[in-house]
Image (cartoon, rainbow, N blue to C red):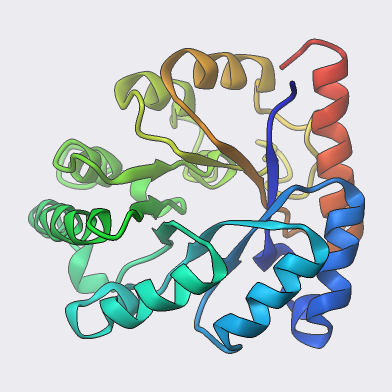
Length: 256
């Protein structure tokens, strides 16, 4: 059985806003088995659940604003996600005051530990999604290490393309070994050292064979989530379709 692939819907955000049902149908037809939502709750949970049920897609996560997991909002966030069938709450960014220095990152890690415990009582899981700033040196180390060295049951949703965008010194492969069994979901985003995100999976500078091999050895990934944002090469729907086809070709060629 091959890997399970999902789509980060931020990749097709405008299409989704204009036509929720039609966009989800197109995503399913491409061969995606699940989707990850993002941002504020702009539609009712009942509407999203109906769309997921109709298309046969599974919700494998939600990129959730930080304020949604704070104490005064956490219960409503849990209720909403229960309705749509999602158990994976992923925070994709944090306010500056929580990430401005080493001490702040360590304190934030402690807050994540507390939230993760509360979510666990409801059968839900908390994760964090990186951009590039977590891999830029701060006070002699990396924010990513400050955070994950001080969390326990917080998931590592590594975005490999975002991490590499921090610079050529970023070692995405070492991270998979350093934090074993922390990645329930993984973000796959093509990245080129020359053109940035203006590239395609299989044509970029990520060693996909090595990356997947380390995922298999050190992690227990349930969903590999594709995210593609470079419209200078392809339209959003074309881009995410090409990404999925590229990964399946790598599977067929026994690269991954």
